[in-house]
Image (spheres, rainbow, N blue to C red):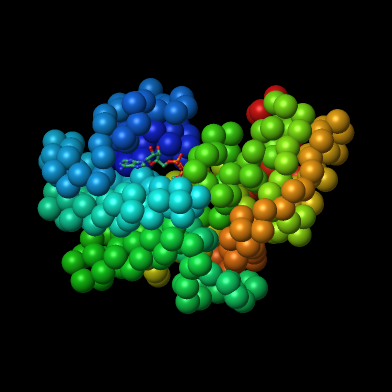
Length: 306
Ligand SMILES: NC(=O)c1ccc[n+]([C@@H]2O[C@H](COP(=O)([O-])OP(=O)(O)OC[C@H]3O[C@@H](n4cnc5c(N)ncnc54)[C@H](O)[C@@H]3O)[C@@H](O)[C@H]2O)c1
């Protein structure tokens, strides 16, 4: 089995390589010089800019992967700051990937959407069929790519599947994500003993620990197509307030100095994202259930960081 990963140098991709079968061939591709963190031994790396249609075509023609994990993206903060590049990477990049996947008979395309594809005001919990009217450019691209993938699935027969990831708590958060505060508050508390939060103490967007995130991507990637009732799935783990996260960190690192200096623009964007989310379809169709709540996440993440 051959897997090809776009955005393969990034946070989630590098960590996901360790979840893939050890006898699989894993081809990581990205515009970066090299992977940002340690990858599995069965991974190779090559440069691929998804904005370049000819490059996408020639890499797929050469590699002929069975499964294409399309993770390349500009994240929320970068997308808002540079809509032109976000359009090229997210929208144009996805179009090139879908076109080449069809042309070179890729069996399956897995896409990482985001809870940022929703917009406020939102029902709590957010139902699976909730209309997606995102407030940010990044969320707009994610909602649009879900629709693009749906077209390739329903009209052209490509096995497209995606999940709307909550904010991922990880040791390698992308600096380009407005949501990176949720990882950095843990990381900086361990490494520097202090952190300034730009969100509100009441901000409580849905979060997921990296271990649960990797588990969900693994389950989705390998789910039986016959059991899948939809193309894009909601995913939920927990939605603690920033204040509750600070309390968990301080219970374990009493000397940590964590203060709130709310930036209204950042806080408004984060507070427009979902809190509780209905993910019954993922639970039913591919046995999803999270292993980490806030306390378990704090225990595990802080010990990993230390
Ligand atoms: N981390 C989160 O909290 C989160 C939440 C929801 C969804 N997601 C999605 O998961 C995916 C992976 O996110 P991540 O956290 O690993 O982010 P990341 O920024 O670490 O990874 C994205 C990768 O895309 C690459 N990239 C950018 N432009 C490219 C181009 N033109 N061609 C090829 N590669 C390019 C970057 O170099 C980077 O390595 C993204 O699609 C992101 O939108 C992440």
